[in-house]
Image 1 (cartoon, one colour):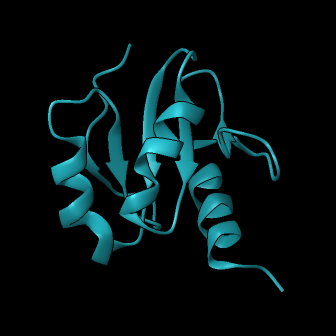
Image 2 (cartoon, rainbow, N blue to C red):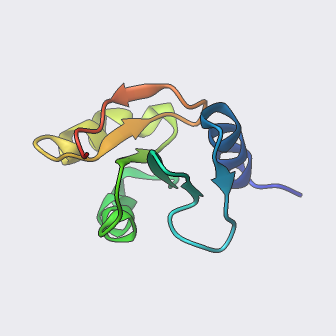
Length: 95
């Protein structure tokens, strides 16, 4: 049975025309964006390490109830935030 993480990653990959890479980081990757899917805002530090060193816009995908805490933790950072449906809540400023 697919987990909410897998469902969200597949949905985001399809929306952005990328590939979901289960078991690899970042979860969703293509030439223009990278997305790491997590379930809680407390995992943001780990997600940022997994997104480090790549090129293109970088996002962390979290469920909507985690967004207030995530926005607080991502304030002043270049990493963007999106929900499990692929909607961008905070744009990425990475180039």
